[in-house]
Amino acid sequence: MRRLIAEEPVTRAAPWSLRLAWFSVAAVGLALLLVRDPRAETGPALVTLAAGVAVAVLAVLLAVGAFVRIWQEGARGLRTAVGGLLVAALVLAYPGYMAARGALLPKLTDVSTDIDNPPAFSRSRAADAARGGRLPPEVSPADRALQRESYPQVAPLTLDLGADEAFGLALKAAQNRRWQVIEAQKPGGRIGNGRIEAVVRSRLLGLPYDVTVRIRPRADGARIDVRAASRYGDRDFGQNADHVRSYLEELSNLALAVK
Image (cartoon, rainbow, N blue to C red; front, top):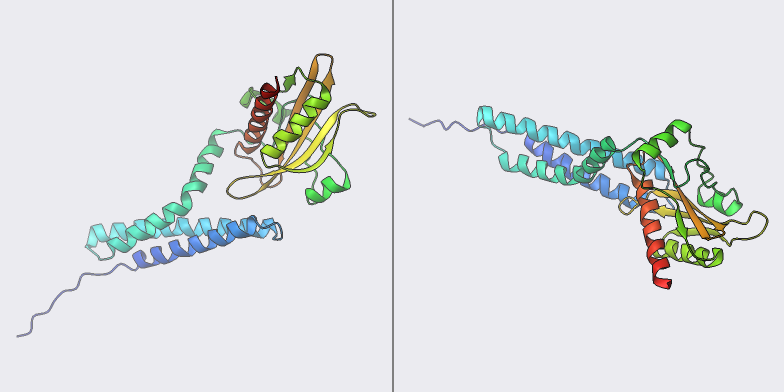
């Protein structure tokens, strides 16, 4: 008499989790290439990135569902489900970190060292072209008050150097930070203030942030004000404050070196 061998059930969620996880890797990788390519449209690239992250989330859910069935029914596919979960987790690691950071930081898109009289962005043709025709909007008093409360350490930098020397160091600091300098106007002329207009990009995604630096001559030296604004999104996840702080730290180190 032939013996019947009862086969263990196989969960279909496990292989689908792994397939979707690898698909999310491909989608996110393509989005990163597009968003860092200056010839590509940033909007569609960000949509592709969001879609890849959403697929990774779905892969995690399928992996969890597979674990439940494996636990309850003894189904096969544990190794495949673990693979899908790990691959998807790698995709979601950085977005998860940024989401957690965004939940703890204020919802701002524009940060300035001078809250009452922030430096104005240039309206020249070169600056307009570098910003893609976008001009950062004026910030509401409520948002300025939120910045004052959230980033009290973001403040102007005063150097006991002449305005021209301070301008030279400010320009060098921007170059050291690998900012894309669009305009650089020395102090003097009708207004008297110096100005540096630049674009800085985030390290991973390469998203552009618009930055303007104001060098104001004073009787005892020069005052440096910096303003950074996001070009996309309704919050900056602390990036603008990081850009301002790192730039002023670089400038301070340069000023100390010349003394």
